[in-house]
Image 1 (cartoon, helix red, strand yellow):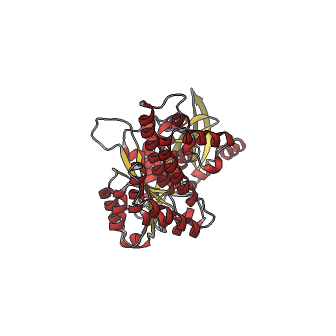
Image 2: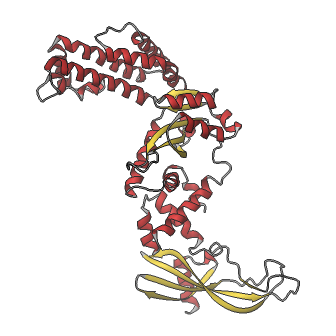
Image 3: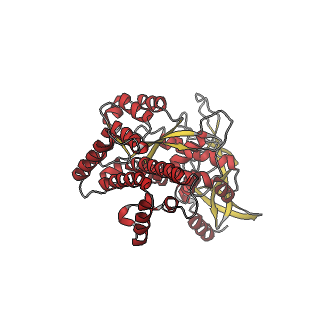
Length: 437
């Protein structure tokens, strides 16, 4: 290949950044083969620093980025030298090429970065990336796992700056009978969201969901980290609350508004079903007043249409027994209104008054509302803390949704360690670190 053609090929394929120049090329089946040689010679012995004498050349074959959609193989003609220093233990050594690839690696350095970019930014599956590179699924997955581990767990500052910690559970598999837990505990850094500086960041995922699991994870962090955490957001699971209270007692625990409203909505549904059964003697059927408003009941009052309001009124007045549903519905709407208050102080006052009004003295005809009142009053500190700190588990739920999408792309996972690391690729805010590889 002449000098002009070689320069053009190097420019298009950007091989100079690997420290090699293209001397020839060939196409075989789906593969593009590029034959290269080092741009400069480096005959210095790494052990003694003496300049060696050229002995011969060997060919090193590595996988590089695809060219116009076809897998690429670089055949690098690497020179070997003889060290003439009699005091040096090394007799024969080959030229070091740190820009090309790691020692004994089968892919170039930029190939690993490209793999992570496709997985993290383009949300591509491992199978699609492996096909583009002409490599096996296991090799591509191992490369992604090892690079992610180095970027996350091997970095000392991974947990720095975490002041607001989100905790939630996540179901990572739907297979029964293998004896392992189907759930993991998800830890998310919500500090950027509260500060308004960026999105949330997945910190870690640990097998199981219990107070013990979260306590052990928090205790495994250093005291500086635990002292820095000021807020822990979570759902209604009491185990996470007790773990946070034990491991980070100075931090305020916040019960997420979504789960508070969801708990009230669940009690409203149970109340409707009970009254439905008591008044009709059967489960909901088409034409039953309460069955017809089952979805309307859970809609925020401000979003109701005039037609829906009329349907609610007719259902509530169709039978005196429906008054229990109407009362529970009003509490549900007041709960939502407290979270939608114009100011945090007004919302906190409204929420406290509501919790106090249903904590005791609820008529026996409203067992669902009484149970709701006892549950919410027991967790009133975490519920009211939301109005002081403004942090919620909403971003954590968003990450959970992205992880569900990830599992769908992969058609499920069998290895939890790989799933955790792949989850960090997708939701660990690693884009800047990946681009800097």
